[in-house]
Length: 326
Ligand code: PEP
Ligand code: MG
Image 1: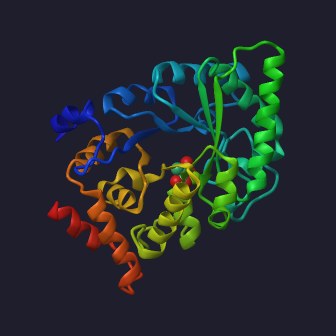
Image 2 (image 1 turned 45 degrees about the vertical axis):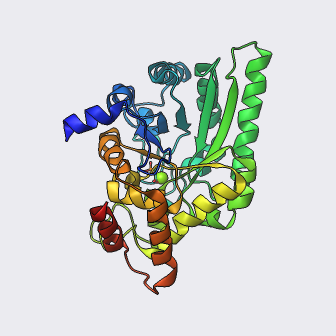
């Protein structure tokens, strides 16, 4: 298998019926970067910037942040990198930064963009470091845990102010700043068109989205296996996001754990996703699956199963049968 994955590494990512798929990888620290070339990923679909903060004992200084981002971009070469702004709070606690509020449900609490909009100094420092590090190339910024479009507007204003600030001081600016949002809070499902009119791209955080759609704590082992992310309601949700991307001409990626499991990745392609981001070790297995997949045939069968059979449970058996026939 490893030999097969190595052989596939430099081959194009394309399905049996000729559909081009972008296979990206998730990362969070500089040590992850060599994997980009080793796995043959097309780029970094999710760079979790909070990792640098989580391994530190105090807030990383502006220069330290900038140094990391610059090294990441240099290591990635001409492959695109999507930096997610700080997603702290929830299950990602910083030992040196405690809110005095004791939260009973931290996953639904003061975290990610909610926290950084309340502490704009944190966001400004990070954005400035990213803008400086990406001088002369495209910068892709992604906002986590967006609940309403207004949060994107506020963050975009802050980003634009930083761009203006740096240009006044004659810094080498990015050639283009693309701003995206994670779709991982269910409220966004009813604001997709508005959201897509203000962002350049979206990425589905299926870990959190599944947690909130199914009301299943992602860290609670008693119940995490009870519900399947290949069940009809969740597949309908994912399809709705892919369709909104198509309708609005907005790039859509998915960067949760399910992207890295060949069977779920296959389902995502059947639902209309053309770009997915996963842990580097999954790129080989997912690419191997692509070569056997007739995506238009899968799409027809999957949509039929989702719409016409009165079934609302898991479609894992349908997908497995399809995969075995391929
Ligand atoms: C997600 O929620 O699916 C995601 C990719 O983000 P994280 O796992 O970092 O919350
Ligand atoms: Mg998340």
